Length: 292
Image 1 (cartoon, rainbow, N blue to C red):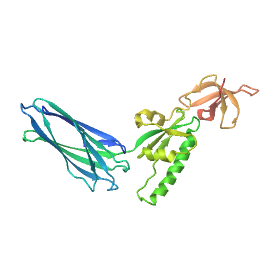
Image 2 (image 1 turned 90 degrees about the horizontal axis):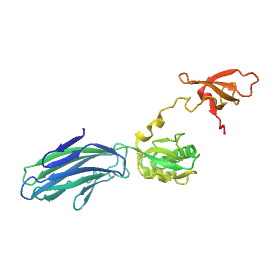
Image 3 (image 1 turned 180 degrees about the vertical axis):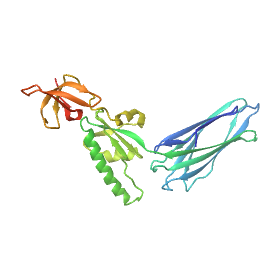
Image 4 (image 1 turned 45 degrees about the vertical axis):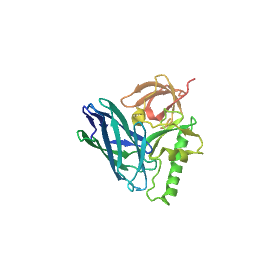
């Protein structure tokens, strides 16, 4: 469903479909204006439909007005939500319709809401539909520096064991860790894609090097550059000393004489060679040394 925005003289209403994680809020702001010269009453009605794995899992809907009203909804209890409010002449009334996704939902669980708002006198009426679909989120875990990779391996093992244990009670149980990444450039953090951030934090407890989770979700745009492979020659400098880690000269120390970025090759001169013969190797076959 495409994003839509309704803005007439009597109402401002932004409606859009949304994809959010579990236990997250999605807000729809509404402004109703009484363009008449007498006080008028408006009626809001919201009906819901659900497509989800577990029919017992509940969603929450809140109408935030002068007083907040909360409702619990699910496939087994999708009672029509109704609210009425008065608007003074030539005045605005602002409300927020807030949907809170279930804490234990499943991937692609979807709630579809039909919103009808109109004046009691029948002069004004608007009807909109929107859906909220559950999607994974990315969270950051804090680790001790140097233990990023070990933490990812231990978390993978624990999450798989956790899944096997839960399958005995829930045939739809899946691995809480959908993906995990420990970029070399980022020290002290690893990134985890999951449906349930609270479960990942629970599973990670006790892992050596794990120091807790970071509050809030990480946007993919913030870390996607780590997913793009960098040229092997990145970080190499002319005159730098390296160690050959592959090929016939493995273990030898050398000095970089030239760099061919296009071919990702490096020409080095062996430090301990009696004859200074240049050797061309793949950039992946060398490791930078600490020259300090």
